[in-house]
Image (tube, rainbow, N blue to C red; front, side, top):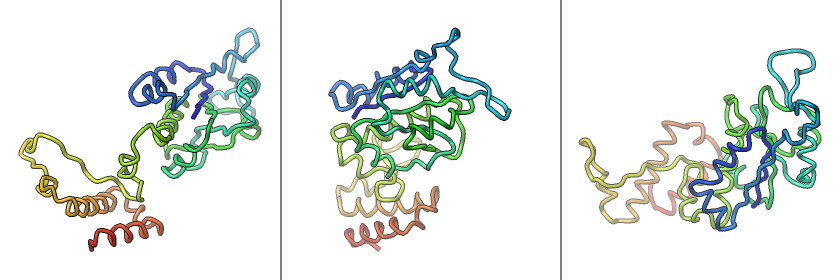
Length: 239
């Protein structure tokens, strides 16, 4: 998969690509992460990329001309173009899986009050919201999406690890423990030390439901999640 990111601050993206799992994925050729400096396509004397909004109001808006030229330089109209925005569709794990199947995605990093609507109308295929809050950096929001997507690409992370994560079956992930066995008076649950895999699976499933009910009860109301829970409980013979 290739991710091309258009930004006024590409160094934020470049710094991310050189660390942790992403760096390994790039080195192995599983992921290509390229950046484009939008300002390189601003041809006026001051290389300006923002201006005051029509109709008045606070803040500035990224101009259509330099951003459009930057998008044309990567043939964006032939590709899937993602723009992280508080006004977009909710980003979910299933959405991340959908994007992970693309061979190439172009990302636009917004700034200030956002980007000229005409860029959205002409180029953007996916306007995506990472949550019900606002961040000042489009790069941060874009990296959230990239991080959620690239790790799902075949070969980046083992399938076993992905299958046990939060949202993989509609529930939050069960709690984890490691050495030491006792920490500040708290013990690792005995069942996890039993070596009885069937009982451990049942315990983990119960903890998933318990944690989801506590932190995200609305997930338990989804029809597909309830069906998955019934299927898993049936396989475990656990009620």
